[in-house]
Amino acid sequence: MRATELHARPSADFEAKLAHTQTLLRQAASDYAAVQAGGPAQVSLACSLGAEDMVLAHLINARRLQIGIFVLDTGRLHTETLDLLHQLKESSQAPVEVFRPQTDAVVQFVRREGQDAMYRSIELRKACCQIRKMEPLERALADKRAWVTGLRREQSGTRAEVPFVDTSDARRVKFNPLADWSWGDVWHYIRTHGVAYNPLHDQFYPSIGCEPCTRAISLGEDFRAGRWWWENESAKECGLHVKPHSSHEVAVSQSDTHGVFVSAQADFSAAEVKGSPEPGRSQSEDLKECGLHVKHETPTQGKHA
Image (cartoon, rainbow, N blue to C red; front, side, top):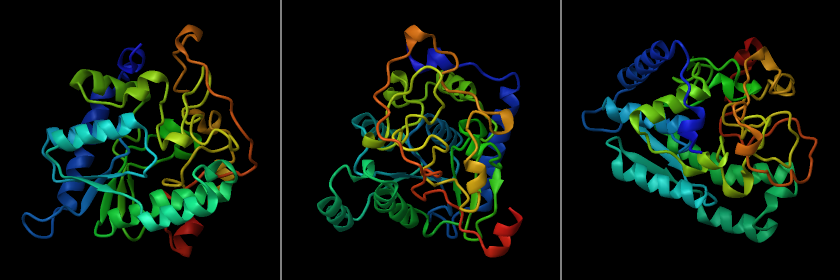
């Protein structure tokens, strides 16, 4: 069954949510327009090529908003993800930039630690993320005063209080226009507008990252259970959206936090769900981060967060 058939169930107030999302995107484009006519906008969408980000890319293009799009090609993405990236670049009116890790850094890391070092320890997994995600992200955002993400509060307990506009980072503002959207809302929009999406979503991959760090999920598993599944289940984050001082909060079970988290597989029958791979080695680390969304806050901001 296709993900559009399985998940597309809009909220009763979906149209109001969509209108608010459009308003936030227009605000981002207006507030952070190009410094010079014809130059690059000072705001970009960080596009992971997941369902949420494909919705945002469609909205940006459909309304011809002056918001750029960038993708981090880590060098370990699924073939399906790379195919979707090619499709986005071919069809997008908004410029799509691709940022890749520094070749020498990758070569040295793999030579020293091995191709699949991420399975051996939390530290090595984070080191891999640093090279493949964090450093390219810094380059992608170097000249930006704002960025747009597909974060939703329903995705996990660690994201349950995501604001629509996050000003906690003194360097740049983060817009989260889909913060209050449900998984059903996302797929309703995709089905209604014929938005291209990663076919891995049809194979029970709700959250898609690098190939060695992502698997399909099973009946009853949390939305991000397929990410870094060999690590502790307390928080499924690459670090892109986690405050470094919130370690107590992220230790709370995803499915219990604030009572808002809904499993991405809640509507699957046993017959519809594929068996998942073995969970692999367990780790005791509380935070699953690569650092991509960790907030760079001042000591004063950290005290009041």
